[in-house]
Length: 511
Image (cartoon, rainbow, N blue to C red):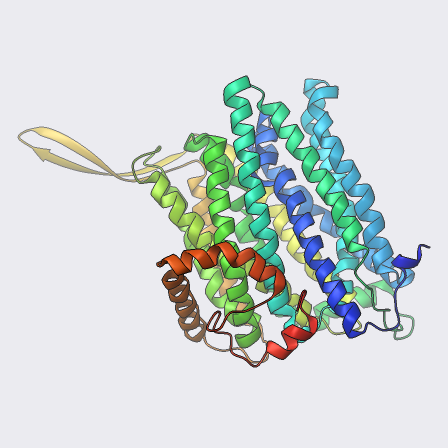
């Protein structure tokens, strides 16, 4: 075994700082891989290859479906007890395979391209699930709990900011290649190559993060006994119910937003990318905000505010068509993507952290694997069901008309027009509110009422607005990525209080 892949008996302060810097770099490279090999680019490639709505749903379901591999992965992690080795090995093989996606349209016959695309992604996501099981346990033992929210918030902010810029550049590149040379497919596959290379660089950076040695196993226990423990835990079981129902609700609609903009609204890919980048830039700002609020008020308290906000964005999607594109479509899309940027920052950060903190130290592997399995199964079933339902709803229409008559002339006014994917968004809203209700049963020490978090969030938003409403504020925005990377704070910025500054100097990158 290579020496740098071996676990260590202890991680000192200097190793923690170096490891967190490497973890930050891994986040940037992995985000680069994610934005260039997924999202709008992957959906656009699938549509170029002739994918249907059902195929788009299946495409979105492959990743969550492979979470079932978390079950054997728990056994492998507990027996091998070499989490870094498992993560690096699976990632190298899986991300190398991801590079082969770029060659699918060029070397395979037309009739097998879509199945091959799905097959390659299945292998990539399958190995990623095994690596993810080991990764979650590894991070639970490595990242200090007292700064977990702020660190992962900053990591997400940095990686999202860089990912947003790369997404914009890649989108403009694809659009220019399509408009000037009619070579959209060439552009999409070259973007996939760049993303695959970034993923392999991330593996090299991951290998620099120290791995604390796993605690000795508490006697010999069967796999079923280990896997059943999270379900028997009365404190963890409500969390599984919430995350599972939430994953099903949001995955009914979110995988189809790109399809909605490209096909229903007829927007060019460049506009889709611009909206995505706008949402990601909002993410950048609010990851740090949610990280501070989560450390101060708990993850559950933040989820109780961010969740309904995301549900609201789903409810707004049908309003963007009347029944097609109209004057308010683009303003509404910016509003939706702005609110979604705020909400998804809180949901993505806090949903992951609440499971990390709820998992018992020393037994986190099984708990986090079961959490990934439950949410994965929900996120698998949702887009598959939604893809089939979308095809069925294609020719369905529900309209509410008002008829104004004057001087014998009728003037019909279309008040409501729901068709196609609009029905999915409506169903997602209903199920989203049910999932939010299930959050009430989750318990986390230190939780506060929603209005407390909402008041603090509004204060943070007012600070941000005041900051960008002046020349000085605009200048600070240009400093933001560097400030995040170094972990430095200016006087009066962030409002997070001074009680954590010593912790930040001790463990955060560049401190």
